[in-house]
Image (tube, rainbow, N blue to C red; front, side):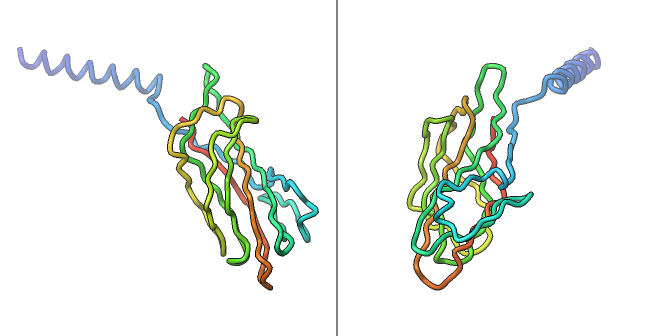
Length: 168
């Protein structure tokens, strides 16, 4: 009698496993774009810039800020939703006199979050940011990154190589 019960439990477990295998379980999907999709809002504020296959490499003028814009491919589900809480940014600044001080996060043309008080500089960084809540990017996710430069005789070089988000 107990053997039949064990067989039924095993069969039920196998059926549940098969259903999960067919339909899958909820999981996150990181979606990235290369830095070569980056746009400089004020190219005249740059001493030089070059788009490469892997990203954007530029020198911003001393003492002047600029905005850099990046899009993130946004996987919309069948209901027209794409939720994300975390995003990543891989970039380089040439010195402590060249830094990122603000990041605005957009859903299409609507700003949904601003990260201020940043001081990200001096070398390669591959950072994960927490927006504090899940935001629905129905119209596509975009990042607007404000850079700033001091006036010291130091490098004001920036490289943006990728940006991505953890869509759920």
